[in-house]
Image (tube, rainbow over all chains, first blue to last red; front, side):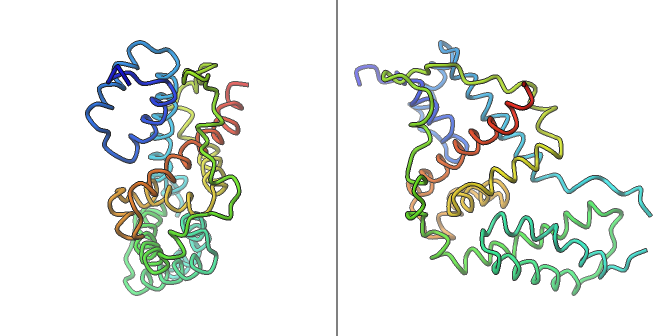
Length: 71
Length: 189
C-alpha cells in the first residue's frame, strides 16, 4: 500500500478486536489513532468493544447478590 | 446457621455453571467442581458473607479448571473443524463496502456503565458465551474468566499465537453480535 498509515474501517475493526488480546505493532497503533480521528463509524465500534470489556469485567467480579444481611 | 459443609455443598450448582461454561464438557466440569468442594472442605474457614465464600470457592475452582484444561489440552486445542460456521470470519458478515468502509454506522449501545452491571445482562452474556463454538468459547473464557494472558494460553495448550488470535477474533465478534441482538437491541427498543 502506498500510504503506510492508511487503514480501511474493516482493517481498523479487526485491529480494535485484536487489541483486546495482543499488543499492536507501532505502525498499527498510529494508523488506528489517525483513522479514529477522521472516521465516524469506527469510534462507535470501539465504544462497543469497550462496553464489552467493561461488561466482562463486571461479570467476572460479580459473585451474586450481596446477601450479607442474611443471618 | 448452616454448617460450613452445607454452605459449600449448596454452592455446587453455582460452581458448576462456571465450570461448564469454561470447560464445555460436563464430565470435566463435574470433576473440577468435586475437586473444588473437597479442597474447600479440607480447609474450613469462616466468611463474613456468602459473596466472600463464593469468591473464595471460585478462586479454587479456577485452579482446578486450569488443571483440567492442561490435562485435556489435546482435545481442548483441537479446533472445531467440524463446526460448519466456526471457520467463517464474522467480520465478513458485517456491513462493509467493497472498499472496506462501513455501509452503516455501528449501533450506539447507550450507557455502558448502567446497562452492563445488571444480573439480566450477565445472564445474556453467559448465554452468548455458551453459544460460541466449544473451542472458541474455551479460549475466550480463558482470557476473560481465567484472566490468562495470550502467552499463557498458548503455552498451556501448545497453540500457536496465530491460531489463538484467529479464534479470539471470531469469538469476540460473535459475542458482540449476540449481545447486540439480545441485549442492546432490546434496551433501545
